[in-house]
Length: 417
Image (tube, rainbow, N blue to C red; front, side, top):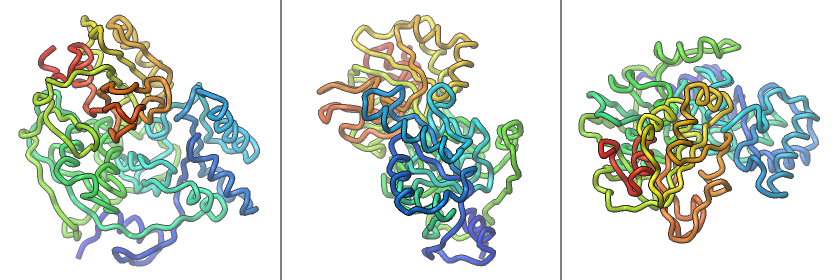
């Protein structure tokens, strides 16, 4: 019997065979934490009273509550800054130097094929787009890694998702992953490695792949893996600063399930509250009025996403009853958006543009919803109260649908604009 991607990665590191469900201890290549999760990890690590073994493997990113919205968030960020200075952590990104963590790390070449990456943030699954095993862990797991250089996993089963057929107009990676989650549910891939493959997947841009891996966790996935191809290699060729290794699942590998999807049947999707699995075609939701439209986040705040949004907003005006908030995911993306004239389009249409931050996605700041307000967002979660009031509602969609909705004041298919 052949091996899956994750089995090969783990076995190569341990230099022995592993079994599905087995608990293993392994040395990750990278450990990530942010201004919400790092302070607890730092506190626990200091209580252990052991040296920091691998400062070169630590990445600290201030992104959730920056620019700081109050004294508490300012103190959280200061903990990261002081710790990075004390332990000489090179990969420390504060406001002005970084951006939203899961857009930033691939951009900086910090995650590469074959890596094992842990992050004290559930959307660490994003890096599977680069064919590495990456997954979210708790803050105390990060503290344990700081002290020992190791972490533990239960070897996961794998599920394969095969996509074939051409994509319809306005359909992107966001729609594919929403469609999948709509089919399997938010627990359909619990503690499983999700592998995305097929002829359609090979045609996807890296941006779309990052979006899909980002939301693997919304289906319960432990990771969301894409196989390395020419697009992957082209993406990392100027970013990689160290060696990497390519792993591929065997054709006869054992999967818990295999799903196949004909993409010609997939239209632009919208996840209705209160779960990412509550999906419907955008055309069926034209009766839903909105108060806010948000374009950004680690899911859809990359340059390609901003270009799609600008192509729809250009020459149009945001509906008078709607707030449009656009947040480029990193400083580099922001600068490129300025250079290409995208920021001017957003402002001219009646939207506002913010510096890189997670802010609105988690209901932190810069876009918090009031009672009974409705937002359509390019983010990854729409749980009750996710973006503010417990009486508000969040719908998830791709940047094209969000932009069209901002113009018409209701959920809209891009063809309507």
